Amino acid sequence: MKKASQILQIIYCIYALLAFSILTIIAAIALIVFIPLGKEKLSKRILKVCRFWGRIWYFFIGIRHKEIFEAHHQFNKPHVFVANHNSYMDIPPIVLLKHQPIRPLGKFESSKIPIFGWIYRAAVVMVDRSSPEKRAQSIRNLKAALHKRISIFIFPEGTFNMTLNKPLKSFYNGAFKLAIEMQIPIQPILMIDAVDRMHFDSVFSLTPGPNRVVYLKTIDVSKYSLDDIELLKEKVHNLMEEGLKRYRSYP
Image (tube, rainbow, N blue to C red; front, side, top):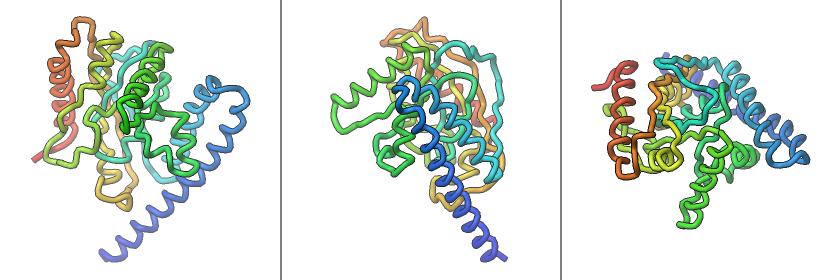
């Protein structure tokens, strides 16, 4: 029985990967139409294409996107979104947050994936940590997005939290420094089910089911200066940690 279950799991994951690949190719073809219209037009259209791609992929693999609002969120204003990170399934919900323009911060290495990498480069603000100059350019690109009233999305833990007995790793300064410098509110959100949909150990752990996103209270940064980064980080970290403990059990 266990062996049969494992075989079905592998078949499902291969099916999901094939669906992902086919939809990515279709999305790339759809976006080619907008290339002659210029980069600005492409950037606007790619969000809609990616959201459509995400909804269709979720439908075919049996995953349900749901947003829970614990507090009011102003969709007509740009925000610095921050979220917990412990699974590759943290990524699809970003494009499904359909209420406002949003650009996630993404790793440069992912842009090298054939076909997907081309869409990825157009959809995210890439961070290349290979040199101080390239890191500085990434910050300038994030600020440029905020100036255009486009929200940005950052995982402040930097990488996967692989300690499931601990809700969050410590946060890096980047998102909080940027929010203070630009005087942009921080919107903490929680990825509740992502690690259940796909464990960080293996892409062959993918399973159907809910993939909920929780909006927590928006944090106003107007009273914070750059000297208060640690205070702001602690406040957001505590808010997110308490929220995760409400939705998930930890040893």
